[in-house]
Length: 183
Length: 202
Image (tube, rainbow over all chains, first blue to last red; front, side, top):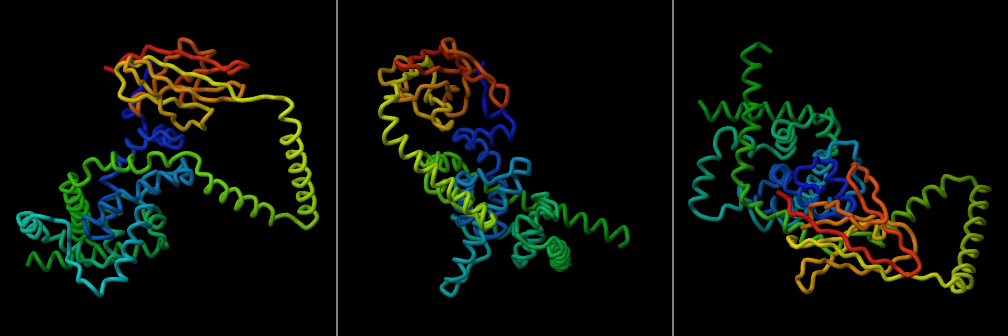
């Protein structure tokens, strides 16, 4: 006689969201917030900014949901929205970059957290974090987001060939850097 | 690439995924309640955004219009002019004479256990309309002015749960996902629908 939306499949939640059901959209946000945050963090390298961008991603996506093609993967579409928002943040940040030197990661508030974070940012994580954006973001999308080259090309709006090259070179740099730390 | 190199490459790929996953997971507390904040921000703003609708419609019509030849444009222009003129004549002179109007229609549903109840239906483009239970008796009410016609509707309990109980509906139809929607026929004197009771979910 009645249904619980939280158990429903993604497509139904999206249809209901399109109809304006905020509860359904809340469920979508719950399911995708970590993934979207991860992509925003890959682009922004700043936890607080990634958090804000994640919120903005879901608000913007809600208002543009009619542009989403239901036959395609929702994750690819929401990552595209996230990537555009984060790129805009980077562009705005770049305008003011002469005012401050951004640390590797911000958003860790307590000294204990900072120490813990610094301890953990070694090895592969440090290598990934220190990569140039153009290598880091496709790598994260590929090996954490499990996206295909074609999907990454769509999300980042760059040719598929470029995606392959950047992933290859990024991986090469991580290996070199990682090997260097290990020796 | 030899076997060792391939294995090393695979291990790097796996480590990248794992490390990033752990970092995101360790930050998951930062995202607690994010969905609530998103919903708070989109509340009262959703629905038919008239500016966006007008903009998109104009864009679409413009692209169609520009794909026409000159003679087709002339024909379309004449047809639009004739339609607008006819619409104005009907709207200004004929409609008032017919005296059709909107009727007060009341939806009521029993849902004592609910924190919130919304009415969703074709009359509002399936945009949820908040129902009220001012006296706390568990009967939620929404009063709408509707044109004569047949409308699909259902109730949304606590923002997420589609409740399919329509004991007093004029009919029941299947929604796109095979769930049930009630039907209401709004006639000359408006309507009053009292549905329920709603059973709390297990």
